[in-house]
Length: 295
Image (cartoon, rainbow, N blue to C red):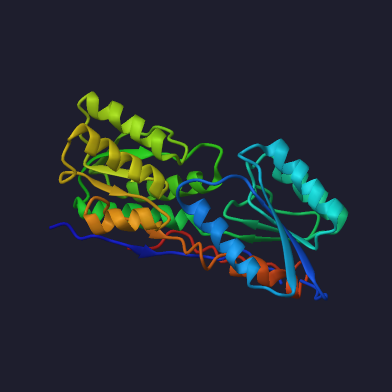
């Protein structure tokens, strides 16, 4: 019987503490929700916010629209929030938001999506995972399950998403050490369960039978599993891996249909953004990046 893996992985990337006041007003700007990790992150942020008697918050959802999110952030600033917790709709908008927050003197806390900038005009903290290591760990586990041999499909989360890019980079870093594994398809499924299911259904209909399916998140992994089930193709001869450790993914692990998921701890990650507004000290960020893990 194949070994089933669940790895625990979380890094709070850059944490900057901030100034005390009688009541701290927080704006939470989220890009969107999905069936997986983002919903868990949203629920944990709200739960944590509701537990703080000395803080109030406003939460907006941009439905994936950067222009809408920027307008909501402008509204936050106009209303006098002390800090903005920011989950960006895309990376291109972050420079404008950095400047808006800096001009208003409002600290900005990124969650779950690392901005591309290396320097910032104002007070910025970043609370994310080391996605490169996530990809490395996932691929090492999958490779071990097939003894470093086989054909692989890599379901990419999207070229515009920094976490998906870094996880894919980590996967490929390990693949460079595994010449016995051949990537036969690398389609974009955009972190979406339905897209991943459609892609894998098409590949299965054409006769593809990969030994490994590596997915940038759990939602795509579940989509791949669903494609196998609907096509009535056995899951016994394929190992599938995701990332996030969502309840749905854990259920698939328990059922024996998912081999690997990396737990991102969405219920712990919101603690850091809510601590930061208490005693903010600018220009004192720490990076916890560790690079790929060794064998």
